[in-house]
Image (cartoon, rainbow, N blue to C red; front, side, top):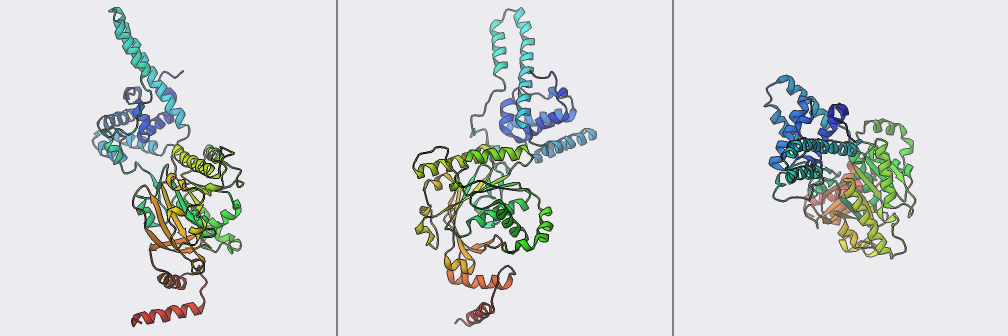
Length: 458
């Protein structure tokens, strides 16, 4: 049972309705034929609803803020113009709390209004004995507001697929990756970084999570092999640029930098092999209910989750876990990053290709973006390595990049690929300039001599 007028629902409810119509195309698609600006009594609300419906009828998409700004300039009444600005501001910053309830309740309200209208019209048809007309009106009223989302309608959705913010992305710390990903990992995307044991895979996840938090995103970091406190100290090292092995002596630096972070970070530990993707999903729902809705999820790492389907071959279990993880990203409409091991042959390669994924090659098929981080023994000594783009649904792949990897703070510098000799020279330059690396005098002298010899083409 719904209320008889929108005013009874209150101002905040109506603002959330407008917010949903502006940001959820599926909701607008379902009710655009049963909603009317006449349901609203507030003049500013009526103007916004009218503009939303007019834009949808023409472009089959939701209007952007830029479109509304232009249309707003055509409003001659200054008082109304100010009122519209205020309610649009409220709509775009409205919380997503109870959004499903608001959408369902408003849909039922609109359906009831349509049914009421059909019954009123039926009185005149009844007098004329037009029972077919009555049946037609009632049937249409009952069907009104049902799910109409059949998918992306190619001919109608041109505007929608070229809307700039259609695919919302969270950037990585590396511009080269962002360029290949058209901005970063997007909502519903699953990204993987492959690497050999001890090669810095988990640190790369800290870099991804820490960078997102600094940009103002909420990050949930799940760890299945390291303790919560230690992973949190890794983030301390990332934010302060102080070696994680020394961070315990710099609590004051951590307390200074953490309050300045724009986003929220939650680190949650699950026992290896005990948690399933359903466990992760339940924890995400819990965090959301408690006020921290994640923008990015990090799982270190997916292979250590347990399959919901037991007593099968390990490859089948891994495939099930990865498919469930990708499904969770799509269902929650948020990006998920994880890491995975390479096989023994891949651990020896200078550049790790896609066929070296351990456990199941299907991981590559499931992921939207996959990169490898190759760091052999000599790389660990020089703080170097290589990122190789193994798969990319959003652009080119097959590219290799050189990496300067500080696995004491989680900072990775990515640049065009260089040979091992260039990597060694570049490492010495970076070591000379950075306080984060311990450089002995011998290496500095060796670098200076090498530079002089290059000047004389020796």
